[in-house]
Amino acid sequence: MEVYLVGGAVRDELLGLPVRERDWVVVGSSVEEMLALGYRRVGKDFPVFLHPQTGEEYALARTERKKGRGYYGFEVHASPDVSLEDDLLRRDLTINAMAKSQSGELIDPNDGQQDLAARTLRHVSAAFVEDPLRILRTARFAARFARQGFGVSEETMQLMHRMIRSRELQEISAERIWQETLDALATDSPAVFFSILQRLQAIEQVYGEIEAVFSDVSAREPALSALEQVASQTDQPCVRFSVLVGSLYFHRQEEDTLEVSHLARQPGLPSSCRELLELTVELQQASHDVFKLDAQALLALLRRLDARRKPERFLDLLLIFSVIYKSLKKANEYPQADWIQLASRRIEEVDIRQWVGDGGASEEIAARLKRAQLQLLEEMMDARGSP
Ligand code: ATP
Ligand code: MG
Image (cartoon, rainbow, N blue to C red; front, top):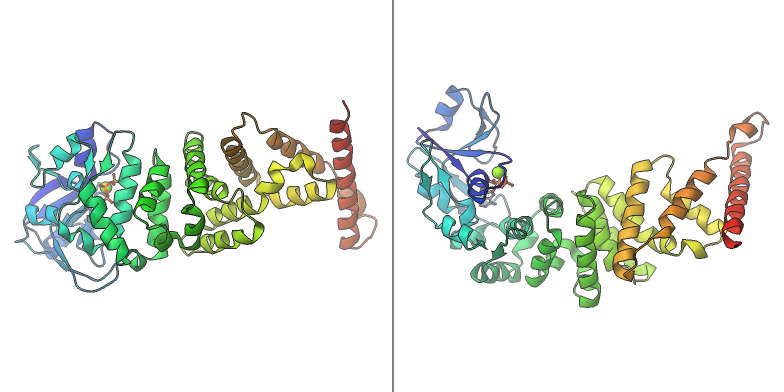
């Protein structure tokens, strides 16, 4: 059997980028032989194994043929007679379809090096259409390598557009969509991912009703630039995504935010992400207007923000509100965040233990707590109001 390094490791090495993980392809072997050599099988549908020592992925060279709709509708053919070239031909992009032998020779039958030099993401063959996930992968690679100057080739854009017109993206499960989306959000240029999906008219098939707002250029452009802004401040995908969606809905009425709730409830979106997204659209207006709120409304906001029990989420939300506001209002500062933090600390000063011994019911204690907190907030607001 022969073993070749393939995919991302070959590409990243040629680009002079650090290699994150190594994938290998094995030619001239079989499932039985791999198991006998101590490899552990991990792929249910694909003949993929983990190396007993390094844990790296080794896949038998294979060909695939689409046999039905849906992501799992593949007929996989792996046998010792499948060549390296056959295997490379089933891959998504030419820059991902190069291999390196153990003696260091580069095998590049699909001109990946040429596309690498031209900074082009190009599909390997017409079989690209067999897997709609490749659309999301291509948009994700464009986001990942935008800084290196990569773009998607015109032919590949046209091919993907045709796939989207035949509604192929609906075959992908919500879990896969979110996995790709979160990976794309973590790249250097996440806005590129969404711009490409927009150009392909794919937003509705992937993210549902938010398409209506997204297709409005006066909402989209500022939202994508807010996303770029936040990407320079944090690499957390869910914070980045909340900035994008919060910005899209910045000027919208409350009833529109139902669309965001549907989005947030798609399976596959981690619950911490869902919370951040929902709280962003629910609370951003109150946060931006915090100096105009009365004590009741301020207390309601602080309680929803729940700094005491969720300190990290609280700081994430303040960052989200601040980036959205500064980016959309072209402001340099967001003093609202400092004020909210101050007020938040202030209401924590009330210690309910002072009333616990009085034998009152819990509702009574809650009412006393609220009165005391409102009073503290009113004092703060008065002090702020006077010169
Ligand atoms: P990364 O650095 O993110 O790991 P990668 O290119 O190695 O990037 P992987 O998802 O690890 O991406 O996949 C390894 C290789 O397998 C890819 O380079 C590509 O050749 C091939 N591949 C992965 N998924 C697909 C797919 N859906 N369709 C076609 N080829 C794919
Ligand atoms: Mg890889």
